[in-house]
Length: 245
Ligand SMILES: NC(=O)c1ccc[n+]([C@@H]2O[C@H](COP(=O)([O-])OP(=O)(O)OC[C@H]3O[C@@H](n4cnc5c(N)ncnc54)[C@H](O)[C@@H]3O)[C@@H](O)[C@H]2O)c1
Image 1 (cartoon, helix red, strand yellow):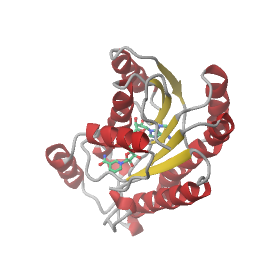
Image 2 (tube, helix red, strand yellow):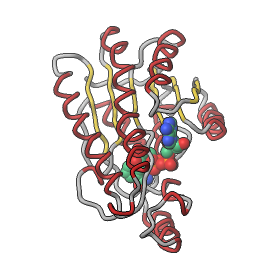
Image 3 (cartoon, rainbow, N blue to C red):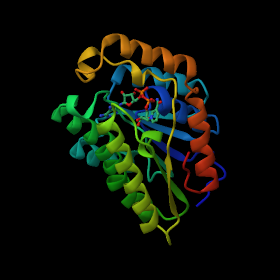
């Protein structure tokens, strides 16, 4: 369902301390929404809160690891008690792993799937019951990727995780037909964020350090500003329609 007026609406964004998540939060804050921002990086989250508060609205922070079901269940309970049901839930937190399939260690598969897929699952699983119980027009946005639509080299774990987010979002969207909660899935392309700033241990053994440097330079030169995604998410929520791009 469309939520045209975002003033004072409760909007929770995961992975909001950086990049796309921060810009999504800023886009909602510019419409006077009340922000609840989540990240695993406490220092960056505090900086994000300061930036968001400059816009004049409310911004609450919670440090949490989206991949941990116990922490996420407790977070949902706490947010419900301290703020009430969410109007908008944005599952954005994510990580990338660069490396060929054969050079992607099993622990990197687990990390990527636990954060990118289970992070979004935990968000939906634990916040949705409160949103349904409260009634009214509400919206879930899951951040997938163009890598969830098209084949990509050296990104099998990331690509698999984003395909899973698409599939989960599609099924959830169908199951919620008949309620007033809509689900959008957003598929950004190349966006200039710190996601490419990975340490040598954060890539597969087939990737050379100079290739990581080049990738970062390519994103800086050619990537879209993350505010493009922030505005697209606001548009999705205001229109109440699913969004693929
Ligand atoms: N940058 C791109 O080109 C691009 C393209 C398509 C999709 N995406 C997706 O957009 C989302 C945001 O990425 P970004 O580019 O802004 O990256 P980013 O690295 O700038 O931001 C990701 C944020 O998520 C947080 N995070 C990581 N693991 C977490 C965890 N376990 N729990 C809580 N927070 C955690 C990080 O601390 C960081 O603040 C991701 O889901 C990513 O896959 C990015």
